[in-house]
Each structure stands twice: as structure tokens, then as C-alpha cells.
Length: 139
Image (cartoon, rainbow, N blue to C red; front, side, top):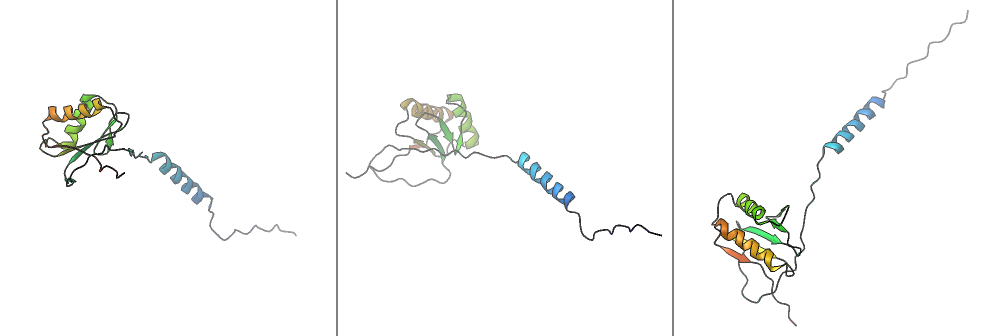
């Protein structure tokens, strides 16, 4: 009589379910991760001669790009309106309008953009205002 041999069970671990789980986790983390785009403005500061001011640690900073767009403490604003700038300054200062405010504007920015920033600061009650410049280059 001929008996059929029973196939031997393989000794080892089946890795297919483990690989499936790893790929599912990878897809989950890829889909659920949010990526933040850091916005760095390149500014060409105007020149001015004079003594260099000391940096103030708690100062708020308004950056004005060449196209007139604003950024308050490194956060870009969605538009160039006065109301948007005022609400961003109010939120960043948390009601402390006695804090120093530094306006850093590109040398090619429109004068209107700088005046709008100064107007927003004045309407909110900021009194300690300074404008950033750079030392003139030696000829």
C-alpha cells in the first residue's frame, strides 16, 4: 500500500502580514502628516548712518516685503489690509501696547505699506516704534 506523504509544515514565520501592517502604518502617517511651509522674506534694507540700537527682547516685529506684503513676528498675513494688520498686531501683543514695535521694510517697498504699518500701530496705541536700517556701504 502506498501512502501519500503529508507535506511538512515549514518552520518559520510568515512575514506577509507584518509587511502589510508596516505599509498601512506608513500610508497612514504619510496621509495624516501636515507639512508647514516656512516663509522667509528676503529684505533689502534701506541705509542710514548713526549709532546701532540695542535689540529689545520682547519687541514685536513687522516685516514688509518688496511687494508690500506683511509678516508679524514671522507669521505672514493673508492680505495687505489695515484691519488684517491691526488684528494681527493685537493678537501678537496680547493687549500689551507698551511693548516696543520694530518695522523692518524692504528698501524697494512702497511708502504706503510702511505708512499703513505705522498707522495700524498708532491706532492700537503703540508708542515705542523703531524702523530697521543697515549701515551704508563704504565706497
